Image 1 (cartoon, one colour):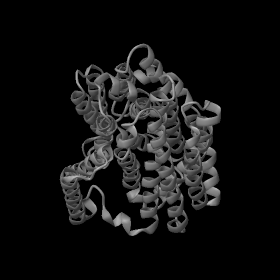
Image 2 (cartoon, one colour):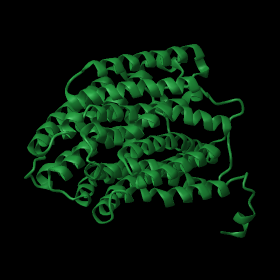
Image 3 (cartoon, one colour):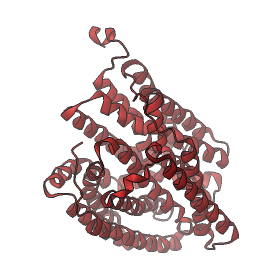
Image 4 (cartoon, rainbow, N blue to C red):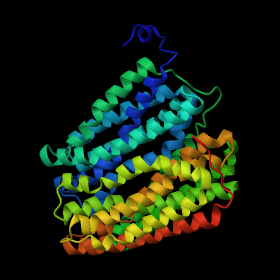
Length: 464
């Protein structure tokens, strides 16, 4: 540390170290999302869990993250972004340790839910701190580094996670969060300036509670239905409760107006609604594929966790290297074309799912599907992010970005809830169910392309 840095008041902050802090903190969520896919079979075997319980290993985390992202950003605006980043990272670290030591599946699921709460606090505030620490073009470069570092972490995590599962055991995947969290907390306390907005903060606690409960009810009902194949009385009752709670959430948001966690006036624009519908469909389909492919390869394809991690490597490599180019191209030609073509390419990759069989080689089976899906997501992701920011007025940019992130995770949440019948199968039945799921996912991705073609005629893009 230089003498000048040592003398700097902590309240002033250091932009470069703020960037490092935000990358470390947000990498927790990026790593967790990608590493779990190669560990799920081992977790299921360790606890003797059923398909419904395996779904909740994923969704216990996604549910609070989806529902509370907007509240997490609002709390940071109100109480201080650095404070909420430190609190969220601390929660994530503590619950990671509990996950690793969990004596039962119920303890693991509770800790995973708490992890989701921690991620909902740290993710929006890491990006908000970057926006405060940098201005102009430097802000755009900082956000680009933040996103690229997250993609790089997601690329390395399955390989590291697979090695840990093979050689140490699945609990070790949660231990890797601890040094990342410790570094982020220490750097935040020393180098990151506190920031907040005076009089800001949509601390909409009632809305957050109803959103979580409503999403939880609907997710649980879908999980019951997909795992058993029957929409019985229990699923019907939980669905009715979920719908009622979700309706209550919308009513509260309507009454709170601009003070709502999710101001409904944002949906007055056709483009904003279309972009979020596209996000829900595309990320729902993509999340289903990203959960199923490693699970199928490990469970019935003869792959080790390390080999499954290597199999997914084309995705983060292509997205990290080519997304900046696609972002620049979309700025020149507009977002409608790439947002129409990208989901179609993803759908084409999913249609190659039947090439993945118990006796197919990687290069003839898995690789073509992964490559096309990676190419399609690379075409779509950067234009989608920029278009969401450009679809609303300047004062709503942060809210729009947070909501779109929540929608993407909700798509993954719903998709995972619908995969019970596939996850409950084994051997050739697992491959048959997987092939059907990939065709359904392809249809959903194609629907996202239709949304882009029909609803995004006037959308503009925003440089970030």
